[in-house]
Length: 136
Image (tube, rainbow, N blue to C red; front, side, top):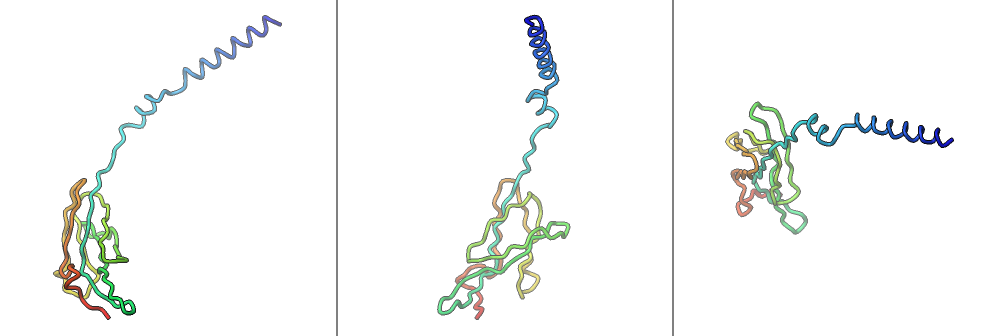
């Protein structure tokens, strides 16, 4: 009986060593996966045309929504505002075209070059709330 227990323990230990020998180490997994590539990000803040509208007796300022297109003309994102403050949009670095949703002329269409890790601010015509268009 003692002899059988000894063989059983030896077999279990050897089996465990075999499975450990076949197991990949953390370094092996990292080597197979390759390096972690972090895509750079760029940031865009557009001060589009400001509009004042009446909310009862209180005048409110909002900004005109705009659409961002890539340099090759593909729609990237539409940005709408809930209040006066422009939001910061995170995009991959590159060249973009900003088209506001407005009745103004095509001269409002603006290009922007976004650099990695940088905030690019774009100021459109009529963006200063002091000179906002009244929209009652």
